[in-house]
Length: 129
Image 1 (tube, rainbow, N blue to C red):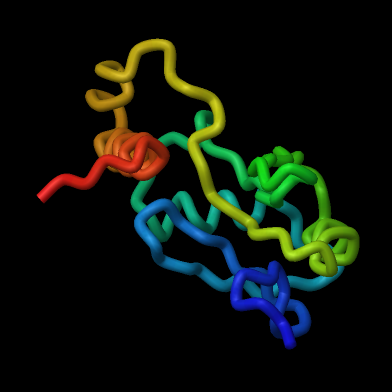
Image 2: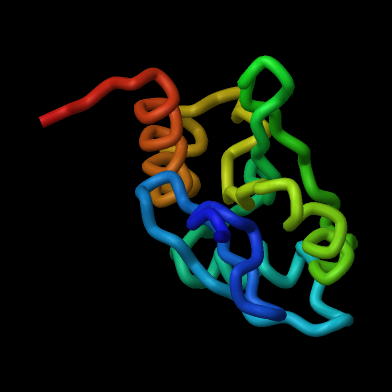
């Protein structure tokens, strides 16, 4: 039985998990790259700048520590999925390069700043009501 977290459940469809709990699905072919997904997510999430973002693969290490593999922009999705979907990895869209000045990020791209806030909040286990 496949886990719901599996990277690939339907052939040629990649599920990308967002920090707010949403899942975005992308169909791909042999020419689709990580960068193509990044640009599509930029549009769907109304982000102005994506230089702080990356697609990463999350997996549990030998001691149940979560590890992240940063995907390169030019990697074909078919290659990424082929190499990883048997290992129960999840593909996440994350801010992987923390901005030097978060206030400047807020000014330039409020949607990206909000995404950063949600990511930090969920990573620390903080719940706001």
